[in-house]
Image (spheres, each protein chain N blue to C red):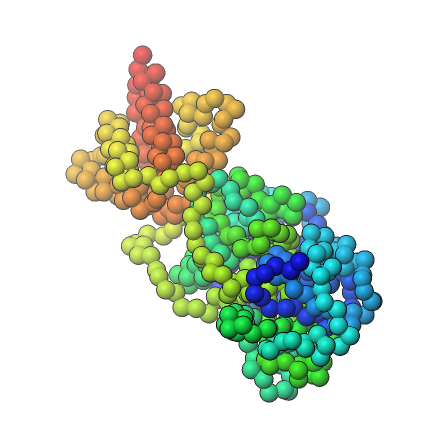
Length: 249
Length: 249
């Protein structure tokens, strides 16, 4: 059974080497974190090399939540950090590990469900993955020599969680009677807009469509939407379609 | 040549595996540290396995100061930290990595020469080694699972040096090539949407319209939009209207 302590989930996205999955489990458990999620591991699951490397932290692997894709892994999350080694061109808040885990501790203290994404070893997270996150974490490494591996990145983030977990929240957002939307709700909103905008011919020319979709998705995930915001945005699109269909008659 | 930046020396005491010496060099150089000292490595020196593992940080090994024993390695140092995984019976100040590197930065700022000792992989530093240090560093690991290896211990200490030595901002927003939208641009966007949504009959029933407009405006002003976001949102609405007008014909 995972520990009762409120904590972020660490999500390994398409990890390649079993050894690195095991090393990530050890790194997490060194700092008391035991909620791992794994998206589409290259070599399938379970992975004997992961088990061998995890040794004393093998329980994390047994209890890891497996997901076929990132939306499935993030369905219940309300705030998602993505770790990246290099800057991307997506507009997002960028946190140090310290700042990120401080924010995570505050959010979790308010009952939110927080996840941290770690990309595949070779190339890191893709822009499409990052577009699903609310913020970025970048470790301030030497610009002349940035060679952190997956296990080291997990280790430093887990270490910062441990450092920040005891701190008292310094700021809370007044939500009124609202809850933050979950990732599944944001996903449904993005899909609704995308489908209608495809019908309306917005994504044009076709070769630019994937990039336009990423920028569009990034907008919704960068901003934190409440459930009421999501309802309103669904309502706006539904009304535009109704208006159009009225003309069709 | 080692960098000119004042910094602590990291001293590997009787390290066993060449791979771990190489991993320590990489961990240091990730955070801009390049002064390594090595005391009596088990497998002699130079060590091809250390070189292979160090890859881009091989310069640290070439320039490492070799010493036959600890007193020789520490001859010029004025303040020495010893890393230990478990409490010892020696009376000494015990620092977290954070506290230790904060103190190291202060001391180095005053011109002192600071060293940090890391023990052999299997058993760690002996009490005789620790007795030569001024203070102890202990990483606050999970008491149920403490399994940091040499490279990880070096990594966390080097990371904390970097955190203390230069102030890394805890949060910045990566704007890519974008600028934030001005208030006038947001205003124009809200007006564009409101006008079209009025035409489309979204604000219904009439007595609820003012409240709905306020909620809608609050959404855009709460979020920070870039100019590119604003352009995209204008484009989406224009396309919906074009789609509708196409039906009108």
